[in-house]
Amino acid sequence: MTCLLLFCCVNAQSQDKKVLGIMPIFDTSGDPFGQQFAQNLTAMIYDKLEGAPFEVVLLNPGGLYNPLLPDTQDYVQSAGVTTVLVAVLKPTDKPQKGDFILHLEAKLQEAQSGKDLNVSNYSGKISHNDALLDAAKIGVEYGSNSSYTARRSHDLISAMMMSNGSRPFAKQPLGKLALSMAAQIQAQVIAQMGATGSASSIAGGACTVTIQVKYTAKKATSRAYDIIINGQNNSLWTKDGVTTMENFKAGPMFLQISVADPPYRTPVQDLYQANTILDCAKPERNLALELGPVGDALLRWR
Picture 1 (cartoon, rainbow, N blue to C red):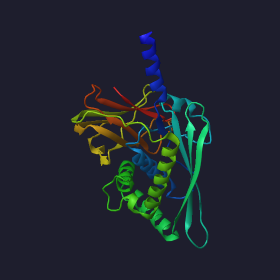
Picture 2: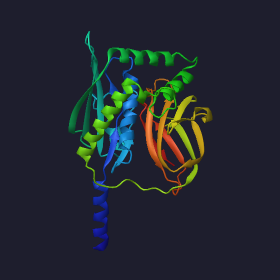
Picture 3: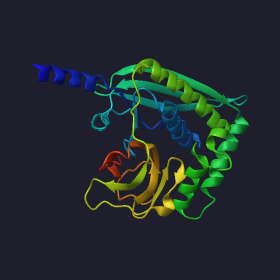
Picture 4: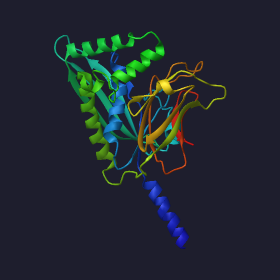
């Protein structure tokens, strides 16, 4: 009887565990800056929710992802999340005179059923000149290096919010607008999921960890990757998708990965953003970003 009661209590606790999955923001704006705005905003939302009283997982459903198509249910369920944040960057209002107005729809969905729990719409203004200036700057950065891999790496380093570039995205007019939207979405999520609970505790210290990008399909390989870990570029130390980090401090790990040479007909995402926790008290030291047949990816410790 005691064992049965203990099992019921443990099972109830597992059912009560809240895990938020954040889908990549889907860009339908049609703007030259739309994709970069969406990628940065996805990262900013994660940053705002880091340390929340529930687990937060960045999801990567693959290069064919479209929130209007209900074909990601299996992937979402395999990620082990209870709630999903799905956001779409809508077409921008561009009057002949006056400010541009960006629109974003963000909804929280129940992971198992796909049922909408909460839908909110956000908008923000940016001057016509600032929008064109930021778009032009993005174009210059893409053309500033000769190789595809170098261009992608340079774009990530100079534009992502944790970069050490001379003008990080968060300090640009578009970036300030993205930060504002991220704060509003944070409030939306907390209001829906609740502020009760406790963040996961981990042991301190540092340890050596190996990070690998691999495919689940046999004979599928890539050799050229750009990998940023906690805002630091590790591409130069990456060989065939494997990076070894020595004396890496325990705690949250935020990975940004692009694949320069995906296998034929594998629709990879332009940018993978994923997160996990490194606990040096645990025996697992090998972290793998496993890419599936449609470019879908999950992080796994081994």
